Amino acid sequence: MTERHRERRYLDQYFTPLETATRLTRLLPIKPTDSVCEPHVGAAAWLRAVRDIHPTHSGDLIAMDLDPTAPGLHRTSVATHRDVGDFLDDADWTGHRPDWMLGNPPYGRARVKDGVRMKKDVPIAEAHIRTALSRTGRHVCFLLRHGILATAKRAAGIWQEHPPRMIWTLGWRPSFTADGGNDRYDYAFIWWDLE
Image (tube, rainbow, N blue to C red; front, top):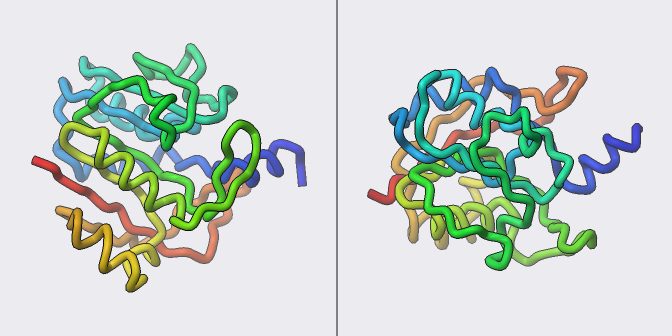
């Protein structure tokens, strides 16, 4: 296992392939003037998908990541705003209220804060959903493991508090690794519409 691979596992970084982000982003009614935030930007696949679909996109494209070396935060990124910080930490949030939050949040139960991996009671994906819902102006759309829909605890909580507008179950398994392999999980693309 390479050092970069160990670091990616430690931070729960598994970048979404551009073709997956583009295929799923095409399902959404994003306008060329809408502001879009990818709060765990990684390689910026979701922001790149928006730009590929709308080459003349004029809305803000906001990138945020805990890892300052994330490719999506580099100057060559399509992002118009770049923020290094923990999306779940209010102190790191810059106050943007984007029209859309798109992405593939970390799924694990661990969270890294100030370089220390911490355990949380709430699975990290659910924390990202709740945080995104509180910080967006209109829409949240995340690629999530399909199993997040099944647990009774979540069904009684977030799904009743914030029922999604649409859930697309993927008929394929995206590859989040450099070798093109995929994991054993099925995925869903879930859209919350706050309008």
